[in-house]
Length: 115
Image 1 (cartoon, rainbow, N blue to C red):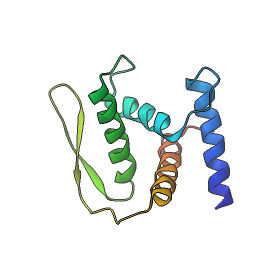
Image 2: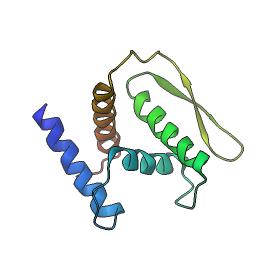
Image 3: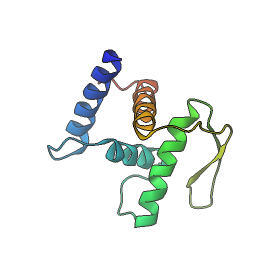
């Protein structure tokens, strides 16, 4: 457990250094960055709905590591769509956070980003 916490802290430090102006990024900000990366269209100004969609893209990608989602297709605008492959068990808020943090660590490890 401590190792995961250390990895998470190291990852947050790395991402914050790369993508912020000195502030420490939280989980939602990191999910937003993952969503932008998965969209593959670079950074631009996004509408409120697009920002919500980017978080959804990130969560689907991350939970696909555990078999809860699988990639379906990209629409004509290039936005990825996912389908549910397994129901996510009911989780408490802190359990959801832990699951997402583990998946974020895995995402960056799979991308061979050393933090």
